[in-house]
Length: 334
Ligand code: ASP
Image 1: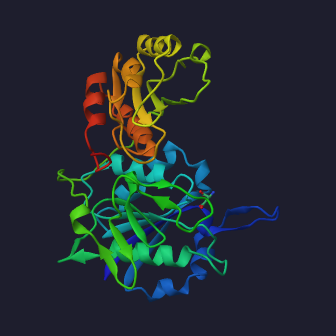
Image 2 (image 1 turned 180 degrees about the vertical axis):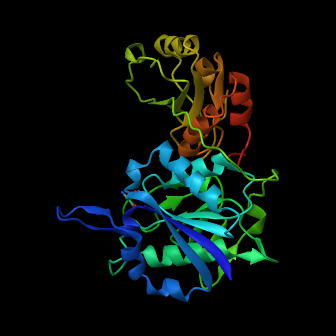
Image 3 (image 1 turned 90 degrees about the vertical axis):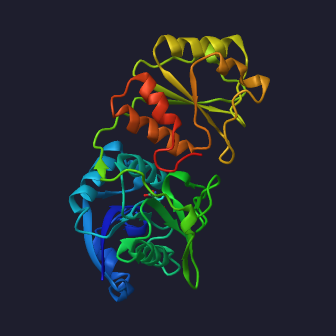
């Protein structure tokens, strides 16, 4: 029987109304009692609950480190991991784990739900049971999936390629630049050609994050001359238009040069969720081209942001950062 470690971090899946009428996380035993079919799965399940289950909008880099430590401590003893997590920041956590754990040879499948587990029409039961089944898949005793995934509403996605697209549909996640890895229908199917296989031999677990990353979203009317370059920024994600376009205005160029003088590494990431950055396609990207700006290519915003924090946490030189950021670490870009 496959052994799966189920890590409970909170999220709507395990919430109930508190005395103020607001949804707040409860402990895992209450959640488990609402899904009796869990005991029917041919899987040996062990539950590992974080000290304080939270709404995932409370999730911080320390929470990612805590998850990495829990997975490292249980890595040899289990065939795979399923993490119950709120949907709001699920894509950030999935990206973080995919970058912080290198050489992963076991599945880490993150799931949650849009409706709490006790509610009649809840999506929690299907999401949890299918996530567990995907995590238990094997061939000759070797886990089929060896990467960090998000499972939601019948689809298995690469975690660092997915983002939350809807707050009110069961189909809450989307992976616009990479196809779904698997699907749960009458049969559970996995498209093996799409799976990530790590080139690294032994698993390594990074436990440092540097969150000195700023984000500026461009919009018509943004006054660049009034935009400060914050002292603690080491990286700035510029959310540009379309294929990576920005104005050519003197104020924008002056802003970029203030960043450069402060030693801030700028990364060009688009506000479009689908497609990629194409440097030099339009004349409107020529201001950016005059500076040392890295391209987030076809990464999700979540992935580009978290990858920056994880790489900064490795204390790399600016050159090493640029090389690692531009390469695919865990299948996050092409
Ligand atoms: N606010 C909740 C959370 O992210 C939403 C959810 O789980 O769907 O924890």
